[in-house]
Image 1 (cartoon, rainbow, N blue to C red):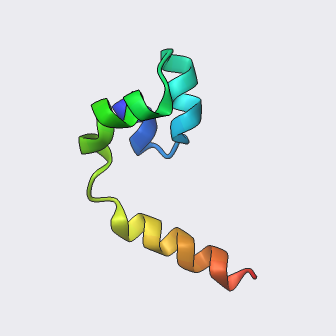
Image 2 (image 1 turned 135 degrees about the vertical axis):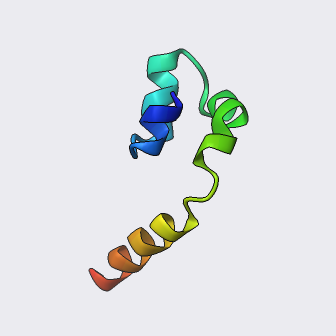
Length: 51
């Protein structure tokens, strides 16, 4: 699951495949996606530029 999350697969998709709710998935795997703020910021900036 951590590999999928770090690869950018959306949490709802990972949760469904794992048989978890998103809340449980993030509770268990939140630590593996910490530190991705820079990537998130770039995606947000890119999305805002497209508007």
